[in-house]
Image 1 (cartoon, rainbow, N blue to C red):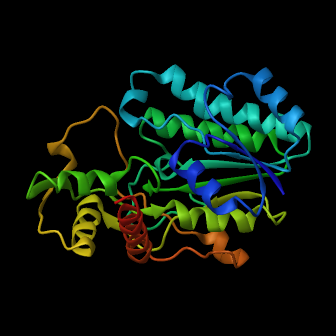
Image 2 (image 1 turned 60 degrees about the vertical axis):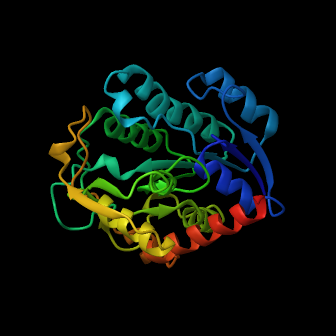
Image 3 (image 1 turned 120 degrees about the horizontal axis):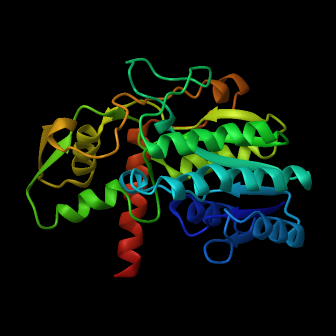
Length: 285
């Protein structure tokens, strides 16, 4: 299967490459080779390469900066998604678009499923929701996958915590925001299954269970055997421009109904990730 990966240098793009190499014919594109905000650029690339599937792993993800740069966030996350969807529909190409738990306001303590109404609190969340809406309006053979707290190959929360542990023995971490850490490896498992079906539509795809950022940090140090004191703090103690959902846990209801939910618990996925990271470090040494 010929697959075009847009945003191939990001965490998800790198994991798709790792898992798909040797199994699928990959076309890897990132800035500046492609600008998804430019329709002509998108059309020219897809027309020339003729992929069977296009995966949009590109996004404007700087949540804080989006509050000041709203236009760019909407151009990338909304219009960029629409451009890809339009061209994919034109060439009868399957399209995978990655979205986020930030489309919800987190005002409930119950896990959100695909049938719950979104209500984003920040520019990033609003721009991603508009991306979803525009893809849906275009129609065609599309899959929208909402995921959360993603980590993999690249800068992420896990690596940040481990880096800080090298110079500190105590950290303050937010303990009133709940979500589900999700390993890119597991997300790609689901993605690969979906693109081989015609079960188009909207899906939640995060690891199982939930925790706070503080819980997440504590589990990282527990699994790596690091003696780190993690002090829980509130969101209010770290004022930010962008409002975050306090409880954005998601239920993979549609994947479960389709029999395609292969997502592990977030703890099992994290342990796998840390073991992989450890092996890579030893290889480098």
